[in-house]
Image (tube, rainbow, N blue to C red; front, side, top):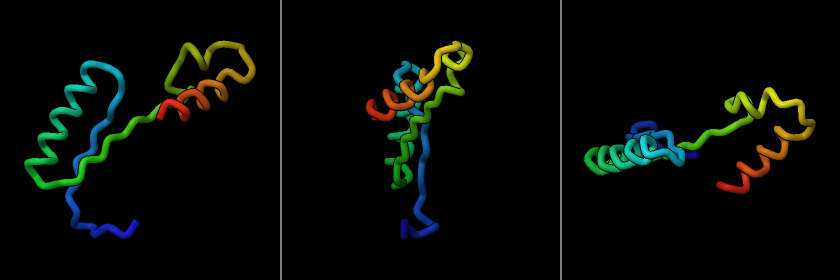
Length: 72
């Protein structure tokens, strides 16, 4: 990436929740108001899912990771 270090950015975490959609709407307005780049980030992993992590099912974490990658 060869962007200037002075490029303003607004970063927001997103998901499929009402709170995340509201945060995205606020971030969009903030980025517009500042003339900034908007960066929306969605992070997911089996470690963040205690129920999936605690199940004794070989291969479950890999399958969930593949499905999450496919959803992007």
